[in-house]
Picture 1: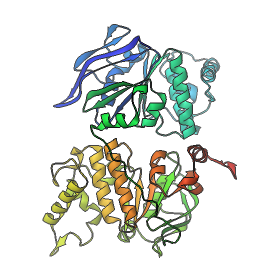
Picture 2 (picture 1 turned 90 degrees about the vertical axis):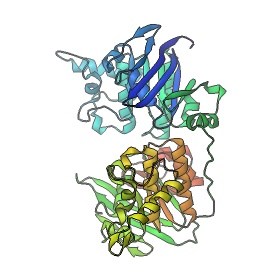
Picture 3 (picture 1 turned 30 degrees about the vertical axis):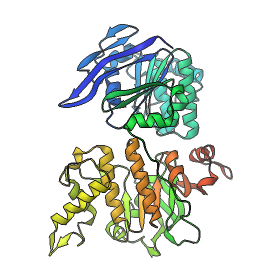
Length: 508
């Protein structure tokens, strides 16, 4: 593994006056798994898009097997054996596995039987149990990712770039993916593995490149480093992880939120939730674990009243919310951090102060003699910027000018302020870097320690285990079980997330 397959030398990329990559140099060797680490905005995606031909470098050169190469498009990259699997799959749901794999790569009359046999043999050679005639829309997300991998293998990829490949997988599926990565590189091929999960890096990588502020700040072998050093290289300082007290959420505490037999039917007349029931006590965090798209979003939106429920009852501190609208529910003391801050959490063309006002614009909290008290709102927002360590020039700064992590801090601060009794944190750290994740985690635990009840929805099992007092596992809109966090293992929760229940077997 000492022969470079690809070398990047002095790559620099400008966007207007912003330097996205500055003199980036590193190599990828034959048969090597190279992990690429870095916070949001560190330049990881940009450098990979340059290698894949989606961007053109302003300075620097790319070499492959020692020869200088000009990569102006993904077509050029694929011709060189470089393929990239994006975090969001590029599959056509209505087409079959075979149709997706050969799309754009065959001409003239197509012998479907021959291609289906070829795809089936390719899948079997890597241990992928995939029906070449199945439609993408009918496959679970784990198999869809394998179809993306098969597309790369079909093109005879020598270098596979994988962007956050385990983000939507169960632990068992993630483990199988790691097995594929090792098998693929054992054949002499190479993989660039982009992830923010340090444990995965330490499991699968041979070498690790750490980027910060568009530059390379570390090039280390896996056996010569550890998670602590990698996190320090990523953010430039030591992190103090949040400490969780163990005396919250006891059975003697009163129930704050109660959800009883909640069922929701989607706009397509397909059940989204079926008889979902759970309680959250004062000072307790209930985590909801599951592969994305199994009803987590519907649980959150049904509680706040954004979608109607077919049946069931939702109550907060004994008050039935079932007939109340969104505004009335929020006024009872509910805070809601949505999963998509861009669509549901902020208005990007408004200032930070205006965004802090959004959910309370109908009340009199910010009024003075019938008019909006701009001075008090500005001072409050400035305090939030200071307390939450938001990197912004002031309360008048536009939301769209902040990084994702700083935008999230503003939304978290607003919802913590409005959620006097109960707060829903839906994917609170999605897309955030280590520093922002650490800050959000500390905030969640601090609110729990104040006695607030918290519903935490996350596809990150490490987050669920670190913060939750109890864990509910959801699969296809049904609760598979609710467990004390000490009673679950990664293996067991992975089986439950995949629909397997010890008492009921595999759920349909």
